[in-house]
Length: 70
Image (cartoon, rainbow, N blue to C red):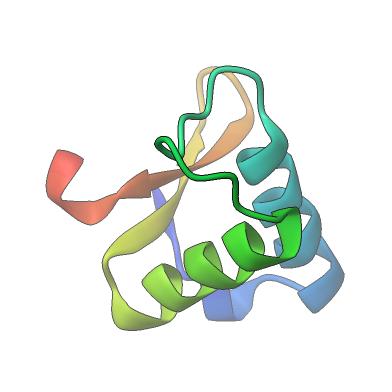
């Protein structure tokens, strides 16, 4: 189920984005990028509709995914 990011409390959204960008196995290429920059990049993708917050009712987990991967 897609959860509109605008409906999340700001603290919840911040925590979700931070967990996403610091998750093990997340690859950002050859250049080192600060956590704050990655957070801003993900937030921008959410605002542009390129990424969505996805909630799995079966697992109870939220994730951020690219819209085109759905």
